[in-house]
Length: 358
Image 1 (cartoon, rainbow, N blue to C red):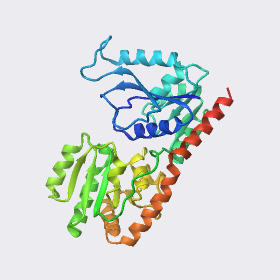
Image 2 (image 1 turned 90 degrees about the vertical axis):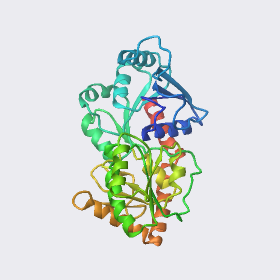
Image 3 (image 1 turned 180 degrees about the horizontal axis):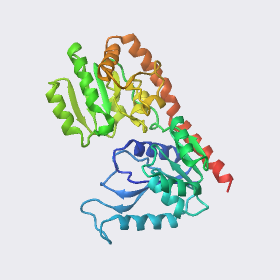
Image 4 (image 1 turned 120 degrees about the vertical axis):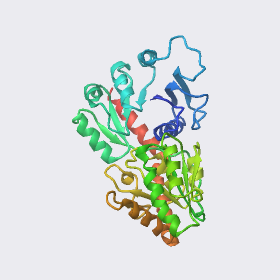
């Protein structure tokens, strides 16, 4: 079976890109797999690509790339249209609503077309119009499945399949470093400002603990200013971006997830695979869809006094080594759900089932 994954860019540092590449690598054990990146933004992908996976791009947007047509949306749309019309695969998996709409419109009907969704579309009208032409939608949580089923009014089957971790073995924390880590894009939705404010309370009471922030983004300057304002320069460290976030998480004893929503969840899943307990917020679209509070994590409610509550949860684990170790064991157990062979097996079962209906 030939499987094509279509993504906006396979070259960036995003959780959905990481998840797709992990899945593609595992499926390539038994199938012919390619990842098509609409845009090429750098020389090499940020995350490693399995050698058995073919990677190709449609439009090169690197600054010095030679182009037959001028840069612009029309050039991208033409390249995407040509790729879809000429597709010779058995299965096409699209990784963004805009791409899924185009697949519904232009991909050959003999191709099984699956939309892989992590978030609700910003503009639902095209989705409601064109998605019924697809074969299925896949989300990573039950709450996501319910949301998409309501949006599509049950006109299309929606399935839950978790994201896949990189192939085992996974790095494992020894749980002996006095380090709290957090990782992801430094954007407003990740709410690192409230983590830094909470850690100010932790640092005041337990000054031997440190906070490491991995990632980059538009919020970095503001967050650095907040660290200076709170005089945390000896306690909070900006570690930059890394393609090996699990390897860095394995150096920590607690992982902080302060996001206002964590629908992608790759950082959460990778933390679990390292056997590190997680402290997060229990918001309406938070990481609870990926976690088992009390077994692998601690979640605190959002709202009034949320900073103090979050700091209290961190301090509770800082001061209770036995509880940290118990949650760490639970994290490893939870991570087994996301092991690549099992996740790929569920995808394979879905793909064969949809093909048999043709």
